[in-house]
Length: 293
Image 1 (cartoon, rainbow, N blue to C red):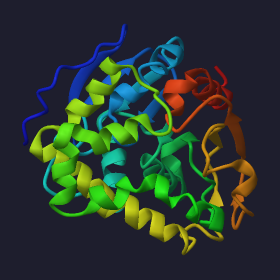
Image 2: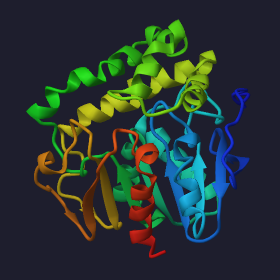
Image 3: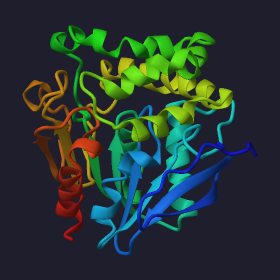
Image 4: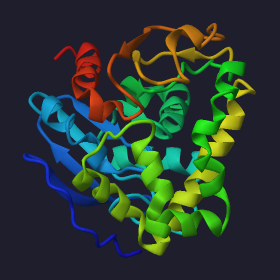
């Protein structure tokens, strides 16, 4: 078992921390509250602390769990296993280790790939799904999106073997800083440092590069092939888009190529890519609509 990251653990009032064994991973989870279970899956380049403003809102009447995914935060960072199949199994193993037969799953950024896979292939594990900043699962990339690809210039850089690892942890971490700041400053310096510190250990930087090379870039390419075309989405689902996102907009997602029992999309105004930071109230409202709390 790999040693966990030694960076200081950020603190959020009312949140406790523990480690669980899930498959081949030593997983760190942050937890708060009691009630219907809600599992929060972070995006990149973040860890459980992405949810620091959402956790207190939901913990009033939910059991909220925010794990660090493979290679991220304080979860172990093995040399392999960063593909979609393995990371989907990781999430299911985390649910098992937590004793959760079913839960409401909240995803953001790359964890949406695991969320959709579980929703279609393992619907019995979900009470509901909230996908932040994600298009619907039958979406196709558009010409308008292609014109915005320059905004994600960092993805192929991070995905490159050797180079991705070096830029993730070196040179004042300018690449990761650029990802966090995006088109506008979102985090204060203490928050920014909590995420930057996660990628300084060499095995963490290697993991971040592998996430882009093995999961994110292949996942984006797979969208054009329509992996969920013709399939039925049974889990009640809410998609929450960012009002200030220049790429993914509700009007531009195109037609459904499948069916759903209960799928609705909303837009959180005054929110950029990091919706949980900018509009935690919108995230909590989407969860509460589904759990009835």
